[in-house]
Length: 114
Image 1 (cartoon, rainbow, N blue to C red):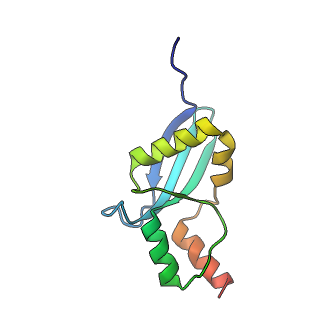
Image 2 (image 1 turned 180 degrees about the vertical axis):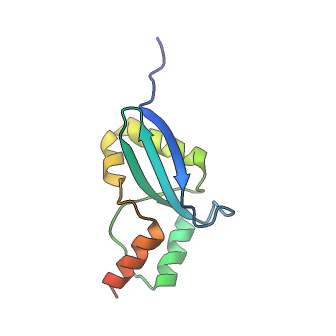
Image 3 (image 1 turned 90 degrees about the vertical axis):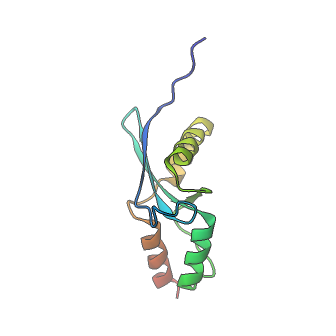
């Protein structure tokens, strides 16, 4: 029996807020499937997200979904995307976001919810 091939083509980790500190950052995971579809996932570490909410004075957040990782590293991003695809392709659809970064989205959320 041959192994099942993953439909995930390649993955890029972009727009890191602090590449020197992947354990405390946010970024964007670009997922490219072999069939040509592309998904953009917002990603952050819990510590970065908590600090950003505090810095912006936000008591809550709702909006585009955020994928939380212990560290923003390519290997972890790749595993998360492949696991999401294997569990249910709709997870990638639900997490797909407008082509913006999490700091931009949180700033816009703050402006809309003073």
